[in-house]
Image (tube, rainbow, N blue to C red; front, side, top):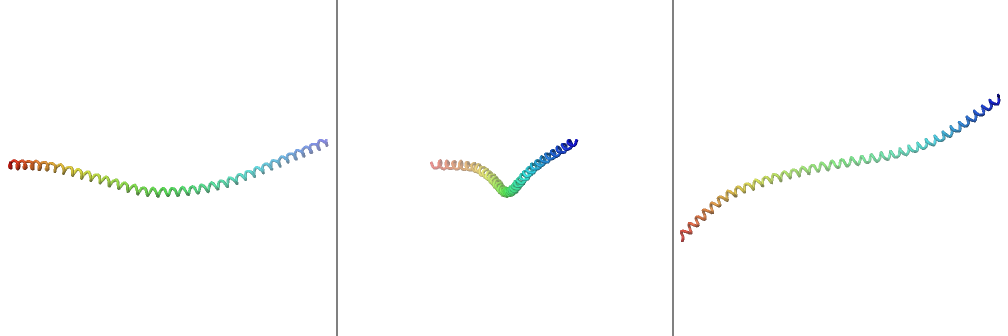
Length: 134
């Protein structure tokens, strides 16, 4: 019976040693894995810092472009207001020119009738004068 007790103790010790070796190997692999994770996280942190810096720079440029576009839009609004004023002035000038043309045309028609009457009277007078001389 003693041999069985010693054999059981030896088997238990061997199992304990094997278990210890496997635990040590598992801890070594876990340590390597954690080092790789740490390195990866450091790289991600560096990349995120770069992305954050680029995003901040891009946002700054976007704000500058928006301000520049706003200034140019304001200048363009002034230019468009001026062009609108010129268009209104041209329309008023066109209207005045039409009124003047209509007035001249009416006056011309009235004068044409008077001129026609004067020519007829003049022709009649000349006819009368030429008839008397003959």
